[in-house]
Image 1 (cartoon, rainbow, N blue to C red):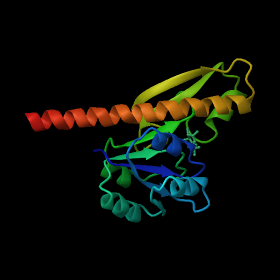
Image 2 (image 1 turned 120 degrees about the vertical axis):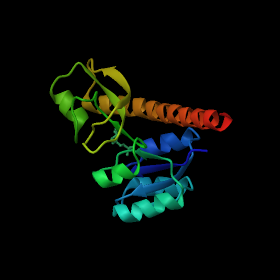
Image 3 (image 1 turned 135 degrees about the vertical axis):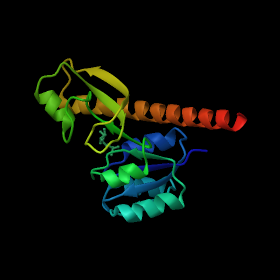
Image 4 (image 1 turned 90 degrees about the horizontal axis):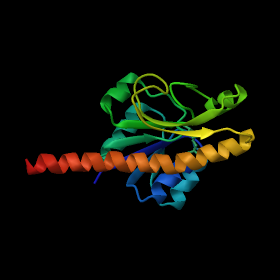
Length: 183
Ligand code: GRF
C-alpha cells in the first residue's frame, strides 16, 4: 500500500476526484481553515489537518507514514528543506503547458495572450515554483471558448489526468517493491 497525503488550500475538486478514483488518500493538509476542501474531507471521512508550519506538517506525515505528497491547489510555497525531506515524492498539477505560464492565474494569462492551445501539467516538485520534471501534459484547443468554459474544460482534464498519473506512480512503486522483494 502507498500512503498519500493531499495538500490543498481551496476548493478541493482535484482532491475529491482523486479520492473518487479509490486512491489511498490518508490525510489532507490544508493551510486555510475556510477552504471548501475542509468540508469535502469531512464528507469523505478523510482526516484533515489545518496547519501551516512545516515542522508540524512533517510530524503529521510521519504519523500517517506518508509515501507520496500530492499538491492540489496548495497555495503555499514549500521550503527547499521540506522538499529535501521527500525527494521525488511530491507532485503538483498546474493549469498550463509548463514551462509556459508558471505561477498564479496561469490559465487567465494564457487566455489573455490569445494562446491557441492551453493545457495541464503534472510534475515533480523541486525547490522552484511550478518547476521540476514533467510527468504528463494534456493540451486543449481554445477555439472560441469563453474563459469560463475554458476553465471548466481544464478542470475536467485535471480531474481525469491527476488520478491517472497518481495511479501510474503508485503502480510503478509497488512493482519496484515487489521486484526488490523477489530478488
Ligand atoms: C487547479 O486548477 C490546479 O491546477 C491548480 O489549482 C487548482 C486547484 O483546484 N494548482 P481545486 O482546489 O482542486 O478545485
